[in-house]
Length: 165
Image 1 (cartoon, rainbow, N blue to C red):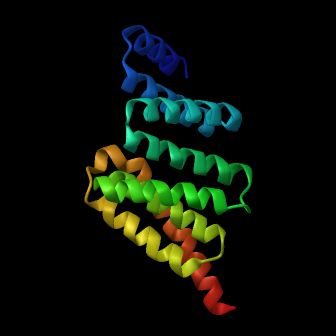
Image 2: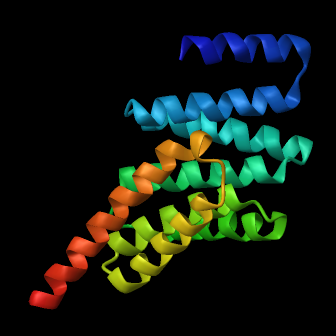
């Protein structure tokens, strides 16, 4: 966290608007992963605001996914807002032909469908996400690919249990 706070100060001094937005995004992710959802939401909102100010649409969409993850962490049974945020990010990814953004959005969509009990849809979504990830540079996306594979395994186990019920 300290590194990104220092980077944020430097970007602010240099008036690097994209750097500021990126630092807020990284701070939001670190806070979310450490369980501080309030700080994560605050940084995410700042990242979205900065991205909107400078017209950085894809950054705004990535941060919408972060907000969706915060929503899921807070209220795993209230998925509507998270689904809407995810759909916005997916639409932006498609419009910009951003395979990484689409893969992230599809992975999150698969998680939402899984949580909502829509196992067949979740299976299709995660397959689509993994297909997109396979077309990207593996090194940069390895963590996301591993997360998608874990989700795929959960979905497949749930589908098998459903078959035997």
